[in-house]
Length: 124
Image 1: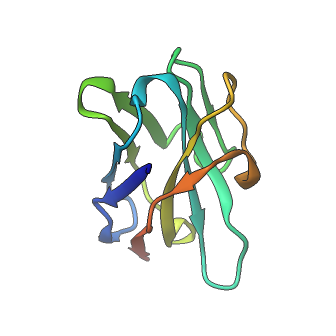
Image 2 (image 1 turned 90 degrees about the vertical axis):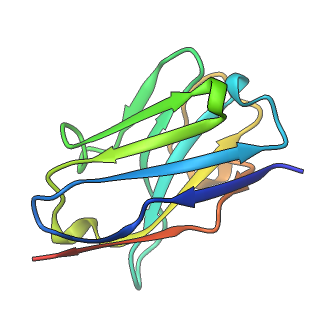
């Protein structure tokens, strides 16, 4: 059974930074695509960033230049460094794992397991 556990969310002022972590268990982490998504109240879950084990990455236009995804295969952990946060970044952030693809997909249906989410609130 694959389990993903996010941490690192919280309340931050606009312009501030947070780093989210997602610890993965139950699979050899290094072989799979890892993604971050977010869901704001009343909105659909949307793609934020993803990274393949080979190093390819993809970012939503809204976070390019501000967010950075990375992974530590030895720790089975993926990170999302979020800088220059804006009020519109407020959402529950989820990490997810794609067990089948070797390229990065940005749609939720490509991902097989999800974490429980961590709240990020940016005050303006």
